[in-house]
Image: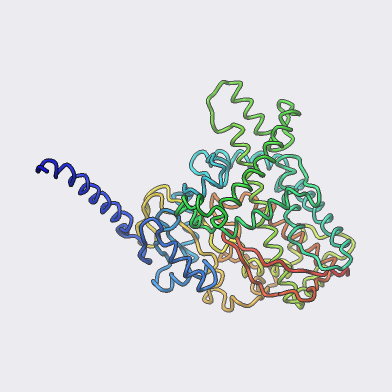
Length: 502
């Protein structure tokens, strides 16, 4: 074999080896000025390290808190979900992340594409000008329909009364709230979005709830291993949660499309009965003007409705389930809440959101439960829209930024005894509800929760309404440990309550 022949064989191998070395160097390289943290591996990054540490300590939130302590930094640099990721753990830095405009982006990894039906639309997982316009459109039309106003309060009241009636019919048998709360939340949301109310015991809602639970266990705020290694969906479709989320997507999108088609069949131009009509009106304007505007099309409407289903299925109902679990664990607090409601509101009418200023201890008990059992312990899910600095560290564009609310809400320097359930910490010396800027369960900044006023009203009216009418007693054998599971958000383990009429 001649020299030229040898070169023709060796050169491609050398080039491939150099390319592989460059790729490996890029995969392993920590960018200059990036926050401290553990070394990562090619392809999988820190996924295996975080998984092992989470299993050892009991949860991902505790793993991230441990790393912040180990490296002595409130900002930890990692490689998760297929890209650079930082975790932020202190009050001042969390406030920065939630309010600075360069942190308003959303991740663009595989899980996000899967979660958004592959469309990259909606209002939850989009960013930039498109997000600003769509969020403003949705909020403007929901407000015009009465969302966040008297109409919403009335609908919440109807759902609470229906729930109380159902609990009264339980005849003091062991009852689980899990199957009752989420449909009530969805009913209010979808009355405004689609003029639709789910029948009690609706099989679609129950199936979506079950799939959502599987989905929540399989994924975390980094997108879990499906984002780091999307090819695993072909090998482990069940274990990665791929099957659960695709089935959820199929069922939810089919339901939303039926709502859209039903509205199209009865749509009267210019008349806006709900959010679907508002979008149909805008879509008609675009088509009439023959404008190529991808911002207002049926796939965007479908994505918005899908976002509403996801938002309504778990967060509010899980928050209430934790709150009622705390009432079972602390019957003395439950008694004080009931007595306050009885004295301030009486028994002839249901508590309304307007009563919250008179029910200070009731509000404090609810807030303390939300602090101790916050359903989004790891939150944020932001993507940097431009290179920036945080706490003196350099963060490249497209870095994913997460916030560790759990470390903040369990910080002994801020709370003194954070592991103790003590509603009094939210009551000032003058007997008023303390608005503590350490606790912001609905977020901050322009990405603050769109349904904040609804969630506050639903949480308060349901919590106060149930404790006005019933004494909550644990069923025999019920485990009252506030054990939580979850990935994206936390939920208590299923437990039974006996609702005794007062």
